Image (cartoon, rainbow, N blue to C red):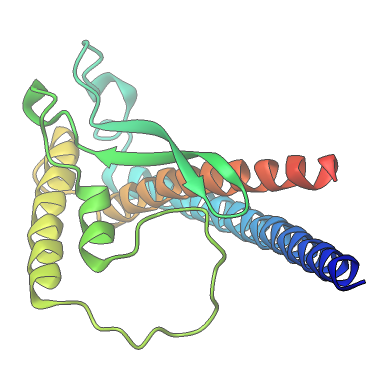
Length: 209
């Protein structure tokens, strides 16, 4: 009798553990779905803002200063690259992880610094498909992290100014605003890709149950 009771208790514990795992996957799916819809709305908003600022800049600066004939259409190294890796996530297993590298091919050497991920790694918050915790974190960034972020911001400002120099030395603030909006939209697209990968992986796990 004692052996049968022990087996029954073990089976109940295994079932409870499985149910908790299933609930976690469902929560991961719902959280990813919510994040996906939020990011899509943010993307649409940034794109609208970018096109509006670009139209305003072209109106104020004139069509001769902002047109496609000024663009350098020769082959050149990509200013931003996308890296795809597989990341192990608790309760989901292997999930594709997308990381954007801004100006990673700086100077054509392909060895430029990845300014898009420096801040995340220093702050200890890598982009990964984990459950989001709503609320304000009480942790403060370290002095080293702040210094690294400031240095990266300065380099990013230089690269932004360099890319707009083709339109002249003095450009409309609206053009800078359009540049920032489209840059943010690109970052949002990468976040959408990560969220979608997490959502689809969770959905597959749920469908197998």
